[in-house]
Structures are given as C-alpha cells and as structure tokens.
Image (tube, rainbow, N blue to C red; front, side):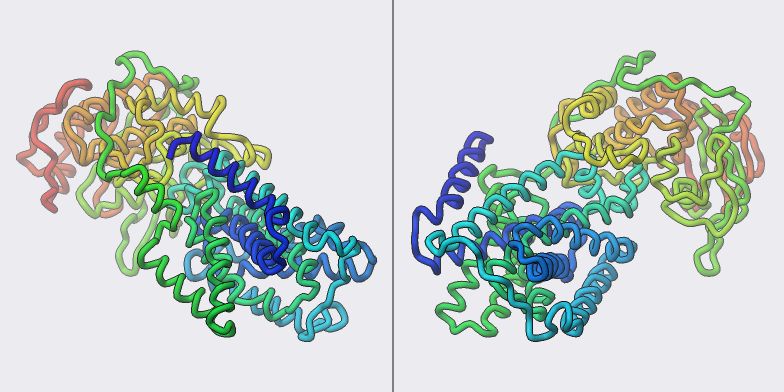
Length: 609
C-alpha cells in the first residue's frame, strides 16, 4: 500500500466515521459507533505503553474508571457538565499511573501483570466501599445532558470523534520522538536499551502516565454518555481484556491497528449479544478472540494484511555494508580532545562477581589508558564478558570499584554510565530488530532531560548525524530497512554506529570480529583504528589473535576471573603465564596490518576455541 493510498484511506475513514450521525438516525447504530470509539480511544492509549513499550497488563481499566469517577463526582458536586471536568479526569488518571507505575514498572513480564492486576482489584474494592463518595456497590448516577433532545447523541459522537483524532495525533507524535523510540527499544530489549542511555524506569512511567491520561478522558466521556457508573464493570478484568484485545487484534505498536481492532471487537460483541443472547457470550467472544489472535495472528490484522500486500520476504538485505570512510579520514564523528596519555580512562579495582559457588570474576583489577586500544583476552570461562557486564552496568557486582575518567560509576545504573561516556557492543549483536536501521541509531540518549523526551528523533539534526555515522560504517544505503533483515556482519556495523552517536569516552567492543567474514574484519579494524586516531578509547574482547595483535596497543589477560598479565602484544606472546594458561607453548601468531586480511594461526584456548 503506497503512502498516497494510505492517506486517502485514512481520510475516507475519518469522513465516514465523523459523519455517522448525518448518515443514519438509527439510535442502535449510533450507540454501536459511540461505544466503538470509546474502545478505540482506550486501545490507542493502551498501545502507547503496551504496543510501544511492550508492557501488557490487565489493569488498564483502572485509569479509565478513575477518569469516569472523577468527572462524575465533580459534576455532581458542582452542577457543571462532566465535559468541563474532563481535564481533571485526565489529571487524576495520570497521577494514579505515576504512583502505581513507579512501583509496577520495576517489575517485568508476569510481575508487572500481577502488580497492575492487584492494583485493579484494590481500586475496585475502594470504589465499592467508599459509599459517601462513590455511592458504593450501587453505582453512581450522573446528571442528564443539558442540551436539547433534538441533538440526541450528537455531542457525545463528536466529542469522542475529536478525542479519537487527538489520541491518534498524540500516538503518531510519540512514535517519532525520543520517548517513543525509547519505548520501542524497551519492548525489544530492555537491558540493551539501558546501555545506550535510555532511562528505562522514567520512560516506562511516563508512557504509562501518558496512556492513562487518555484513558481518563475516555472514561469521563463514557460515564456521561452511560449516565451511570458501575464500579464492578469500570474496574473489571473484562474491560481491561477488551482494551488489550482490541490492540492485539488490530496490531500492537501500529498507529491505526488499535482502532481497527476496537471496531471489529465491538461489532462482534454487539452482534453476539444480539443473536446469541448476551450474558456470558461477551466472555466467550473476548476469550476466544484472544486465543485466536495469539495462535493465528500474533502480529495483528493490520500488519498481517500489509505484509500480504507487500509480499515481503525474509532473509538478509542484499547489497549492504558498502565501503567505509577512507582510511585516515573519519567523517560523521565529532573529534574528542584526547586526555593526557598518562591518565587512565578506565580503572577496575578488585571487581568480584559470583554465581552460586562459582567466582566468575574474582578480584579483577586493571586500567585502560586514555586514547589507547586495549585488548582483553583469555580462555573461555575466564570472566571477560562478565567483566564487561559489570563495567557496563548490565550486571551488579558483589564488590570492587569501577572508575571512568576519574569518576566512580559502579553504583550507577547502565543508562547513567552511558550518559557519562561509557558505550558497549555485545558479542551477539542486540539491535532492536523491529525498528529500522536509522531508528536504531537515533534512539541512544547522551543525557537525560524532560524536554528531550519530546524531541523528534527521526528527522532533523539528530537523524542527519545518524545518517553520517551510517555512511561512516558503510550502512547508509540501508537506513530505512528493518534491523532484523540485516546480515550478522551488517548488524555489527550498525551497532558500532549506534554507540558512536553517544560520543563516548570509552567504547567496550565485545568480539567485533566474531562471526563475520574476513573482508568485514578488515573493515572493522580500519574503523577502530581511525576512530582511535580521532580520540576514542577502546577496550576490546576478542578471540582472533592476529586481529588483536595488529590492532592493540596493550593486552590484558584474564584467567579464572583475575588479570594475570598485561603488556604490549609482543610481551604477552612471550609471557610464560599466558602461554601456560591460555595460548599454549606452541602458539605462534603473525600480527596482521590493519586493512589486510589477518594471517597466522587462530587463537586456540584450552577449551578448544
């Protein structure tokens, strides 16, 4: 479907939906459309946290009910229309989300679901017991509309239509901002998102509160339209399930999918009640559709239809990974002022981490000189990756200290370390597969600011700079491709561009030459050398010994969680401790010049690597 056809379809749908009261005077049909729009607005709101952030729960009905009660109670006590109190309804729902989200967002997966469902049951209990305020389990009636009966339900229809348009505009805006891309990153890989500067706790709470505010508006309009609030319904798992199912049915993370899902679900619910007698039929429809979507349409209706229309195939994208920048000239990277060479950029002191009775890192200490390319080598199980995880913040140390450029960082979360200039790649690339190549590179955050969350990231200066970095690594031609479609070597190059946008002081590279072909190894080596000349400091874990010898200024050797040797590549090759613990007495390596295919024997560890 072309962009022009898509725009025409959206315009036609908006005209038809907005003009329903003009096209039919049938009250039942108007009621069906109004309830569908209530569900559509709710599904769009749930999509911000669930579809974008990947946090699904059965507690979405709470902010909806809080908004309904807020508008109703204020209207009853002031005599003003509930429409006047819709902003207060949105605010009350957002405050609830900020409070509950600050607690629930600390959990993941089923923990988050349990916490939010517990909150739903607690709020339902309070609503049924606070009789002086909510009228208890009997429910709360609302004042009848003050406009002329000749207008029928037109004000409700147009209010909900305007609210649906506003919710979609908000959702579309969020998708293009740092907040939206950060939520997408959390959905795909929360730990990786933290390493590129995404403050995952703040992002989740803000996304939760934003969706809750929209749910509060929907709840306020619904309460006025229904003229009655039933606490058991507005704070029910069934209502939460309908919102969640509407999003899943249409397509999570899409813009219009939740709207399509809401209308399909509401129409099925209506005709089920009409033809099958109602009652538990609603539960049967919701439950049956939830199972069907999970089994047969896991991506939702809209992505499935679009996929068939495009005839998209799988597999790596051909033709990627063009030539990198010319050796000796790095473009697209802001040159850093090199620190004094005698000052360490990274200091690790007595680092410890155990898993049960196994000491993966046991009193590890070393330093990485500013402006250097330092290699970290050792046999399998020596603690290299665990050390990287402890330095980067994706794993908590049992003891020891980590200092970055003179500042202690081991007590900071991963995103704070990224803001202070620490960046890392992973042994197995961890790009955000459902995001485009460009989106992967513009998602990192160099520093946190509330204003920055709303900044547009997919266009403007940020996107232009990301494009320069993609050109640097030879991936500019694939900027609009989904990251999941790239080959393994292409992903390695994109991941390097992703960390470079952080303007890091220190880059941790975990096996940059692992699993890629010799030509890409050569390309990676050239990029590392030229970036180092531009002022970047590197700590590299690598098993390809010729690559290490041709690249590094200094080599650190780990064994059983400790640094047993350090020195120049030439010194390390002759060190008896290293030969005995790792290389073997018969090891001979000829360091390769950067830009040439590595030669010599591949590193062999006692584990047979």
